[in-house]
Amino acid sequence: MDINAIVKHFDFTEHPFITSPDPRFLYFSSQVREALAKCEFMARDRIGPIYMYGPIGSGKTSLVRRLHEKLSQDDRFNVKLLICPNLKSSNAFLRLVMETFEVKTERSYAASLGNFEQFLVQQFQDGKIPVLLVDEAQYMTREQLKLVHYLLNFETSKTKLLQIVLVGQEELGTKIVNYRELASRMFPIAMSAMSLEDLRDMVQFRLTVAGRREPLFAERDADQAYHMLYAYTKGLPRDAIKVCFELLIDLAVGGHTQATPQQIEEIAKAQNLRV
Ligand SMILES: Nc1ncnc2c1ncn2[C@@H]1O[C@H](COP(=O)(O)OP(=O)(O)OP(=O)(O)O)[C@@H](O)[C@H]1O
Ligand SMILES: [Mg+2]
Figure 1 (tube, rainbow, N blue to C red):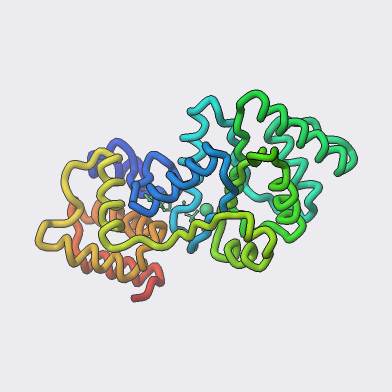
Figure 2 (cartoon, rainbow, N blue to C red):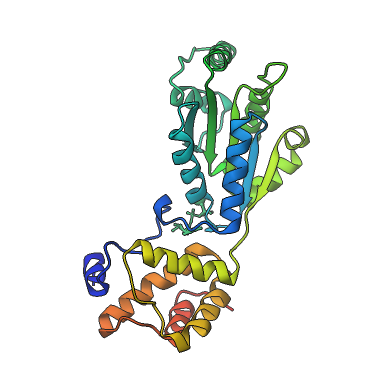
């Protein structure tokens, strides 16, 4: 049973439960809406750098991609999204940042920094807002965070020259809190798992995007099924999507289009999820 067969069986236009963080499938829970609005507002008004952290599979990458997409549509922003590479030195990290912004690097670290500062001042004079988004920022080393700290000191008397949003798993929060000078300059956004209602709406939203018209569960089963999904996944969207992915295979193999709560439970258990 391949993806195309599933899509065909349910008469979808595409598969609703692929676990890649596609912003089109992003359901705007109140948490997502608020986090996006905060990032946008902070960037637009050049107010401040943000670090966003949360549990594995809670939707951080999807959110930061959506933010990237949104800001890219606005000419005032020069927005770049980096995935924190496995580079130990801050020099290598600086080079990567500069290359993404297409700024010439130099052999010496200090000279590179000089070029970058000049670029930021030029962007400011041109009325542009450079925004650096870094995903997987939990992997940033102390040296790299030091560079972020340094970059945050590039400012005019009124405003920051570079807007930064660091996004990563829980350890990112801890790392920054432990780096007090940095913590005092940055604004936190803590992401958490979804509520039962949001999880349910998220699943239904993804089905709708995929072109589904019928509900996945019979009306008499729906409440129990979503409770089950929530209990086993603790409201983490990636886990829920994985369960739904297998659920569709089971249904297609059995020739059905609607599922039961028992099927959710069996799959969740087989995926080693626990209540
Ligand atoms: N609000 C949402 N609406 C729809 N799908 C979502 C939502 N949040 C997360 N997902 C889905 O859950 C899965 C995991 O999301 P994502 O990769 O963004 O999580 P993450 O927090 O970056 O995970 P990790 O900690 O492993 O980097 C993806 O398939 C994503 O599409
Ligand atoms: Mg991620």
